[in-house]
Length: 178
Length: 150
Image (cartoon, rainbow over the protein chains, first blue to last red):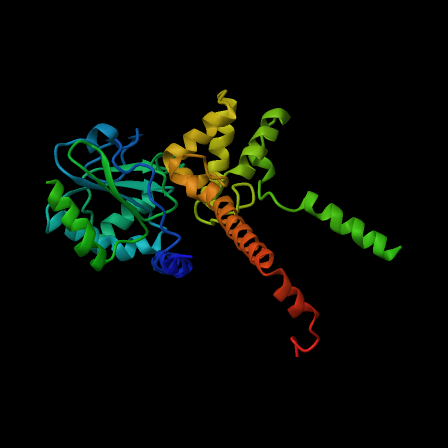
């Protein structure tokens, strides 16, 4: 009988414990997007009425040779309000293009919301039925996608952006794609 | 009699529970609606992860139920409907994980553990038998000796 065989169960236990320990630190609500490294889904959204400039948002606008963000928001969504200054900073201080998809909202209320909180967006397309949301595989608002120069989805963040997240993930990613 | 009624009530209850589907969501065609129901049971609501699409009241689940019905009306097969959703939401929307190299550990892991354990138990049992065969008398004496166990 080889002595080291007795260590096998211990080794198996340690391996499993380490694996599960790291599993504990993961948030089970954060699921990987099915779109990562794939072309942005097909959308053709009419512009948000009552906002200047009234420009529609389609897939072709996501393939610009520059990295950009697509931000799903709605005027009825409280976390959207919370992340709005961060989105604004990304657009105005760091100079990245941010397009928005106004999700299941009333155009009038969305336009008023943007007038009140500031409007950092390049284009705002409206998605009254949430169909574009399903094309992007979102669960709710807000959600933010990083799109690269070729129009491929590189990152998805469900829920509001936080200063930490912008510093640690979003900005470095955008800079590296520039 | 009262127990009979209770048993009956409990047995029938599941038929009426489940399914958060509102009447206006349903399709007029009963065959398609039936297929939509079957799919709804196999698909997972993305925000309430332990519920199926049919069980969930979440808005996104409602939207996805509508998509399932739209695809069916458009003539999609069940598999096409599923792959439509998987393309957007990932394998996660399937309540039953697909069989592929990445999920082999999931599918075969438990059976593998049972096999390894079974082989180990069998080896140990065999070795014990061999030992018994090598020292039959001492073991027999030991077993017969009333003081050995005290």
